[in-house]
Image (cartoon, rainbow, N blue to C red; front, side):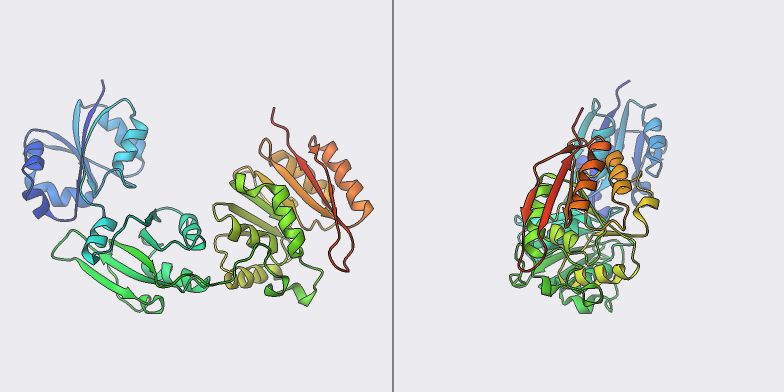
Length: 402
């Protein structure tokens, strides 16, 4: 039996429903309903006496198993059911179902209209049960307006603190609370980021960030080495800017989604990669505990949020749960180059790339021998010299797709 779904988007107000004869007629003509707990409390006075209510609560497999018993069901969702909403979930889980949508404004649209702020140039992001990644990307891309759906972790205060930590101070914040509920609705206009933490905010809420001025932060391709805090001030403990650019070119990062930086030290490769290609999911590994603070300081100063840092011996690191990397850079190996290459080869995605900078004939030979032994294919090397430093050979290998 193919279930017919009527999905109705509503704000947090019974007055909206009472004003809509279409919604009242649908409620009157049906028996089987579904929605969140908040939706039920709102709609309970309007439901028929024989109404059956299926609460939408995890695990969703159980919810959809209950749906399958009924021929017709009315589902209530918040705002626009296709904007990070339950309507999208129904379409994914029951692609053959008959689905009719009756949307209302989503919360970010309501906030934009309240502020009389045009939103055709706004990028909209959900942090509800999601990581920071898409917000980080929008910030690095210097978007002029960013609309954000929040949750109890990614609160307006937490968002403001993240922007301040990574020096995205060109934004001001608008906050909408209980939008669509005239009795509770409140909008905070044009808050400075430093004011948000002290500002009392109720849930549910959403946020719009608006750029006050264009970002004039210097973001060159090849961050000058002097902009990094170094390990014990040692200038040789960083991949130099010209080499960094060539490494990233060899790694083909614009075409990648997941990148591993092994032996990150100052974090120069990861930070450069994140700033230039903010879509990347980066995992950076380093055995020296003091390098965690280096990465914190350098990524904060240079505006590169969202790098996942792993401190400890890479050979002992559990990486099986991580997505397969499309590209891997080995910046340091602690005398375990062969072992690291063998481990990388096991997890590297098909057609994935591995790059290593060799400063000696011994390390070059070891890399080549280890790569071939691990079943990877070698690409052409690149020989380069920067200033008075020793010549470097950029070595590249790849995992041939089968």
